Length: 109
Image (cartoon, rainbow, N blue to C red; front, top):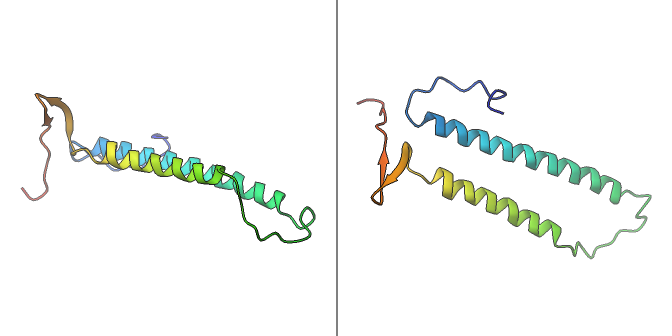
């Protein structure tokens, strides 16, 4: 995926690689969601065509698959936010309970 997204600009800061990696992870998630929604759309087109269902049913869905899928996507997104994006930029390791960070270039200094 990184070679496919090779249009990233030149890395001008110490944490640019982490930002690029986060962008790649989000694109993978979007690809999986796009494929999943595409299959779901085709399934719905086939399942609820007029020939198979001549009369409309207004009771709604009763399955647990849709809710569990929605919860799964939310957990993945929360995981990306909390465990990956929530880190301090440029931190590489912990030492004595404190984050030891690399120096970062700050524009304008």
